[in-house]
Length: 414
Picture 1: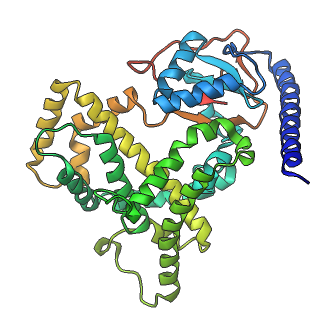
Picture 2: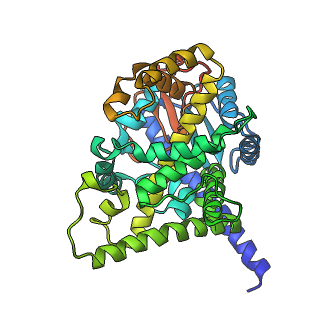
Picture 3: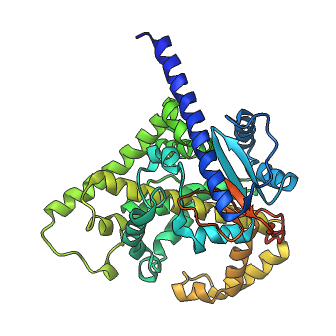
């Protein structure tokens, strides 16, 4: 069979899948709407509602221009707080209605899954707490949760050391510096040390070094996620050699430390040192429950993805806001100065009330978390939506309440 014939066959199968999937979803949606007396949400204008090529292009352009959030807000403001659109044969519901979000994330959490996230994220982080659903998700969450108790995160010496590395890299001549890039390197170092027991050493890493290659590969793979999220299951049919190569670099680095810990565990004869007198390593604790090296790597990379990005995003956004509010900066600095330059304890951090308020407000204004794709698993209706193919139960309407200064409320795609 020639390559051309194989390509045509692949295209035909993909088209058949899209058409059949669309028909089945519409039949299911019609039954749900009829049973619950639901109405369709407003539809986002698009040229065609099969592939959604115009939305795919505009979404990719927004990612490239780094204004995805602004693009999402414009769509909401021009359509509705809850609207539908179609991409790659999937009818997608996007909502900022607090009642819908509460339904999906809390009240009917078990009725929704992550949709096609495993197809987008799986090649990089595998199956872990952020790519699993149902009982599997609950098991993974229970396994990693003890690693983030007060006892394990209260030791701040490691974070102080990595922050010291960041301070040493700041220019002393008042030159402009990209703090966001530095924060991402710092949190990559602290997260890899906490998780794997060894920092990757991204801060100040020379071009071409192992740390530089790892950070570039990790960043590149993550930057592919918005497009991969939109494509969902279609990622299986679209080759991406650069993404695959980046994942391979990330996996090779993680495998080195996973295999090292497993070897040490297998040959360790002496009892473990007291946790109070030794560095806490998340991998070591998880390895007590998981012996498979692939699963261990997946669990660690899932937590690394979240632990690095959300912290760096929070720091970047907080300093972005502080630079525009000098009065807040001065008040915050006065509170921190009460420590008189000493390393804070966990209790000290809890007593810094204004610091907590600043971080909370910064999170509300510029959340590190933007969207959560979901699929409805059951036919029970949410508070004001039957979100998979239908929303807005008859007689209801979306709340217009806005929690953030610029209405950048996280959207939920169902």
